[in-house]
Length: 310
Image (cartoon, rainbow, N blue to C red; front, side, top):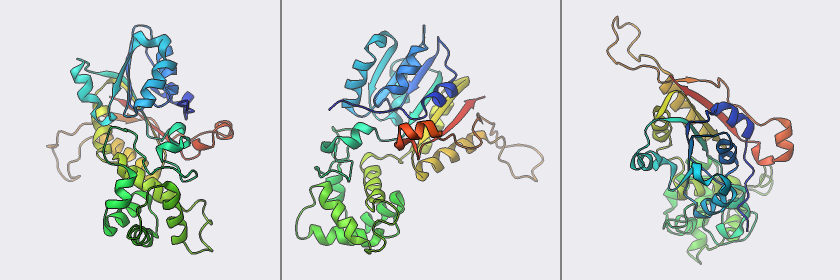
């Protein structure tokens, strides 16, 4: 199956990055390479560092971007480790950083990856197939209390306790090996009259398990802060989120970086030495316009926030 992914808010990201032909850019989530392609097209003597934890994404995107291979360095890792990799390569300050926190269309549509509740497939959900932890482990090995907490914290599902209990009850009889089995358990956890009232009842629980498997929110605030501070003066960071949990973390990190002095208001002299590190360029997040939504329904929940190093 071809690694296909329609880049979300592409024009807005490219405009937000304000690309310099001789600049150094970091695409933290390469995916299908759509954003990276438009970045590298604009480079003359610059360089793009493209990161992804999914080997299939790296292999496919490197073919798509083969005409620009002399300007790209590929890195197989979690983007939260990107700065360590850049240090190893002797790279200091960056002109721009892009983070697209969405799951790729390929990962959702390829049944064998186990991300989707629309296809019966092995429970997996690993973005990095080299790692041990998979959705199978979470669903079959986590205790009921931990499962409920994950479904509530990462999926914000009000029926998290019932869903967790039903998962544990089911697995006492047999292992839960497929997305179809899990989807059926979730569906039956909802009262019939509410089951389809707000779309597919599986959405929140599948999201929660995927986030747990891939550690998507772990240290996200730290990564956003460190990547922002790695920018040159005038450098830009663009971050696309797809659900409220991610967006709140990014927004909070930008707000903290934007603060200038955090001493108590009554204190006559500043002693905190805190200085504003970024200017927030998006007072409200940028969302997809009607044209993009008509072409790509998965852009509906996307939010883009942009900050500039000062």
